[in-house]
Length: 257
Image 1 (cartoon, helix red, strand yellow):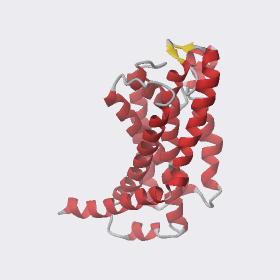
Image 2: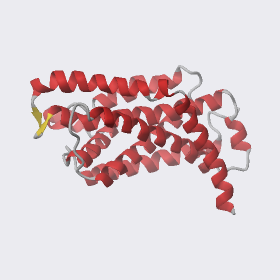
Image 3: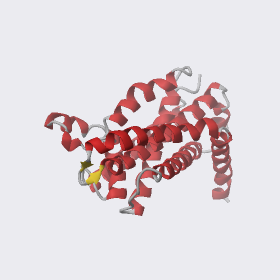
Image 4: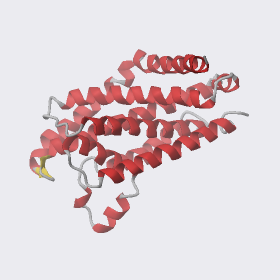
């Protein structure tokens, strides 16, 4: 009975989240597909032949997993940060917090919405990639696990951004000045083995490096870092951000006035 009473608010939040971004698919699903197509055309088809191979793979094959992961990261993050901030701005998030619904149920609902959008956009970009390269799949379980954990991590990150945001401009600061540089410096378009030793050491502090390489391993069986190490880091990121989000929601920081 208790489980059923929790499932109703959880499913309600998830349905609301999914219908929110699917209703405006022209703004949420189509743009990433177009942007990623341009990446494949420019970096894969035009620049790729000049570069040749990277770690034994054609350049376009090597960067395809990173481009797919980039779309997953951006969309999982964007879905939660925009939705939660909108709920906070319209002040109906307060109604959920005072309702007899555990905070973890509310959090799970928003995170699930981010996961669904991350998977959906990732699937669309994967279909786009098939027009440019023959995708490999070295390990299906690892590939799915990495996408799932990455979507969770960046959904949680998006929620933290939304909690502390005071105005709509604040929800674009982190994606612009933090997320984008980390993505481009996270091994999406290159192997960190190409970097000088100092920058290789700096790169290990970039969380996206582990996600991109773990996903690349799932698809190609190739990674610049140990896959075990990558999963350990993903688990640490997930648990840490989950605890932070639960604490913030429980205390009503950035929400209650």
